[in-house]
Image (cartoon, rainbow, N blue to C red; front, side, top):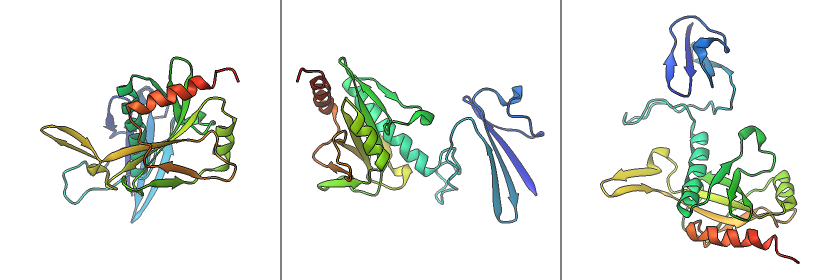
Length: 227
């Protein structure tokens, strides 16, 4: 039986060749993830002691050997982080800050707030490669507690769907002499008025761009106008 012990810190990924230090020992540093893998024949038994959530579906080596054979994030987590990063980049281009919700505090069924001068708007982000960028629209299932939280909001809640044109994450972004291209597009719809039995329908004619933020800011301001 062979054991491999890995620790992750905010600075590096280090392999420890000695012992099994305790999670709170100085050797582990701050923000530590312990990952102990025990290989027994063809069976992988994983032991995980965490201070934050991590996707355990670690992808294996690629046949072309041009990318890292293993990564820290699995494909699902990579897709989720890309979706937030894509939306955040558009908000940054428009000049509005985005405050992401802590994973342990996601009780409002939103991933964060975009701040306008008057008040924020709430944003839920989903990222997928199961749809095409072209077409008329896409439908995403809405859980009951999502609808309840969205309906209770007194400010606009927007659902943003980031669609990736490629399922292979190494094809999401390409670099060339003229710049960097992303094979993705984001679309949106407002959901704080969604019906009790409705799913989220995102029209493809509502593309998330810099101009979208001006429309959102106006809708936020309308919430504070006298009736």
